Image (tube, rainbow, N blue to C red; front, side, top):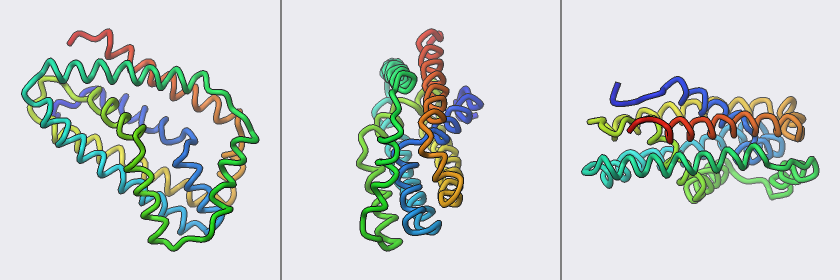
Amino acid sequence: MLGITGFTFFLIAVFLLNVTPGPDTAYIVGRSVAQGRGAGIVSALGISAGCIVHTLACAFGLTAILAASATAFTVIKIAGAVYLIYLGVRLIFTKHDDASAAREKQAPEKAAPKSLRQLFAQGFITNVLNPKVVLFFVSFFPQFVAADSQHKALAFLTLGIVFIAISTVWNSFVAWIAGSVTERFAGKSGVKKWLDRAVGSAFVGLGIKLATAHQ
């Protein structure tokens, strides 16, 4: 449908990506603990709004650039595969430190309380201006769109909607339980280490799958 391929793997990869504690999770947890669940949920919505910008840019900007050249699209996919393998290897071999995790979690709490509008804007701006998020969208989404698809823009939009929906649900869930379970969970470097390894392995596998597939 729409030239989307490997949709099941896409869902699995998105889920693993979201359950792995990262900067977004730390920010949401910090705001939830410091200012309540509402603040955490609004922060999560701001991050999701930023993902909408990336989805639109990927769907229309990337499609416009590559529409006339299947070869260029293939080159982008291969470059993306290499980048995903790089991300995966980094996750697998990342060193974890409980003290660092604690500092990351406590950092937002030291800031002055912000209004819900400020929290939404901060989450939005942080996500939109993060170059790593841009690189991820450009490298991740094309892996699941066939090079000969006649509906690349719609395919990107569909994948983006699914990605944002899963992310919003998960981040809102994190915000909801941040005051209890997540607060303790986020500081467990051992748990995060195995989550990082799981996601890293998934990314490496995805990159290898693309690199060895017939174009």
